[in-house]
Image 1 (cartoon, rainbow, N blue to C red):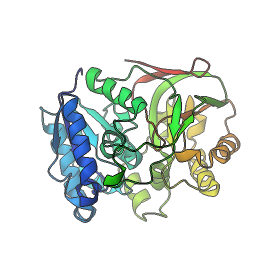
Image 2 (cartoon, rainbow, N blue to C red):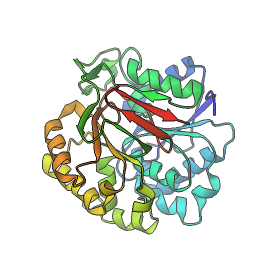
Image 3 (cartoon, rainbow, N blue to C red):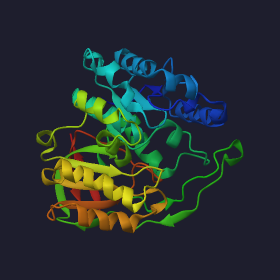
Image 4 (cartoon, one colour):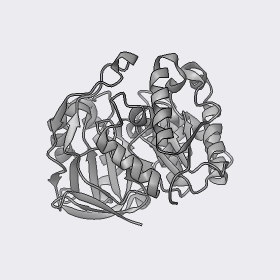
Length: 344
């Protein structure tokens, strides 16, 4: 795929994009996409609001299927994340609906959209992780954050991401999302780049993963009792054989999990056996870098494979700014050179 000519917005988790309190952000996002010379459409249920989409996961699933079936759409962009995307599983897999609908398009999202990435991985589609419409295109600063914009533009104009380098700065998370905040900036901090926690500084493999909080819900039913059951029924999380030789990406949500919760989440993955078969582990910078040192210590103590390369402080997911990471493409990570390159 080359240049993107038309983007479709989907609300596959929370319906926040349809609420009046984000109308100013929505208009900002529309304007920015237009300035890029790209057509924008909203799938039929994308703007129906929180209550409707909470009550109708089947309508969210329909939007995804319809977007894949529409030949005029080049890119499917998630509005935002949420916490219950797993509820789409029966409507996408019971009769091979997703497998029969999927076509070669760009799919971009993060956070709870991790579930969608795992769904699309199951049907063989390479996807892109790390940004969303409301979080990035609709950013209330005078423009998209420069680092984020650079990767978004690369994806729009070339259909791929060829390499990732660290951002020179990171930002405090935005607290005011009101119309009064349009044009305001966030506090900046210097960023030291990718950090090697253990193992070799050079490793390769196809990347897959996402938000650790969402991945944990695949194993643990504390948040939603039926989540592990549904995910197991449809074999959402890849088997250890499927994880062999891959690189696992983990980034943490805006909930800023306590050290205890983070340890539980890492232990669940360790008990699954994933750290014994993957080629490396990439860790996204936590939002506001909260509990970062604690997370690093937990990773080094709970990952039993001491030869496993763990690279942290990747600018992706819930920290700002955000790069875009291709899933399903061979990645060559070189922490000594501060670069991750992709081989298509």
